[in-house]
Image (cartoon, rainbow, N blue to C red; front, side, top):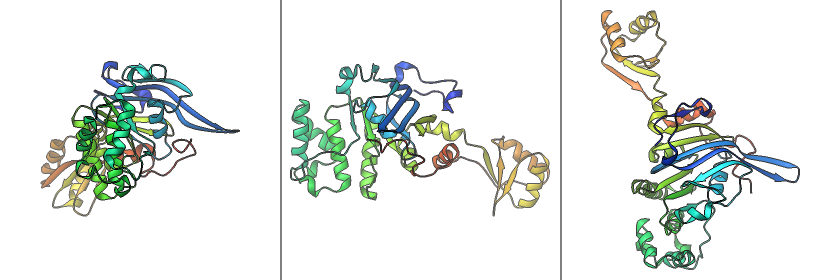
Length: 332
């Protein structure tokens, strides 16, 4: 697994061992050309995805996430760099591992008038899987009670779960999902997120592309953050956020007096309505000791850990999925 956190990859000191990786890219480039126009979707992407659990692939729209997934699935050819999926170089040896990799990247082409089960049966027949597998995946995604309903009657969330069910017919070791909850309502979003979480817990490695910060923090064990086709940070979510623990919240009766004491000792302090924020990780016992010596007794003290939105903003300067340039996912 990713035992060391990679922040600003050019200065990384440790990465996962090769045997632990299901996806590895080095210097991955993809350039689209339209006449004289040249669009860079990937600009030297170095990506590592550890085996097991849910790995978030986070970045603004247009950062190259969809292009990367299409390359991993063999739907697009890289312009440069190297790609390895389950230990096999892609695209040269993709046929060796294609039965172990599946994904939902492009819009599913299900027949509207056919039932969910009938649509999956057609997919299963093309893959050569047993008929029993259709009912197994329908149950796995929670659609067994609507299996006989037409696809046209399905909600957006149900349609997304059916697409994931089709991807699961191969019982993949690696499942690639691109913006799995985009456009879904609250109920559909929750059902798909619950499904992704269960899949990660069963041993399948799920690479989840998303620009939704809350979704990634909620679901993912580890994350790679990309911008403009390059990796800007990677590691376990808890470790990345732990690196941002740079403030301590202190509550005392006399905020002004306590602030003066801490500033005198060289701390950078911000005063809120009912608390102080002391910059720097520091040691809680040192803060309480300093204040107590001057008659200020702490009633509450705790670390302030940023959420993923704060961390992402610090790295990229953006909190949403707005496009940052012309590169990336919209390229054909």
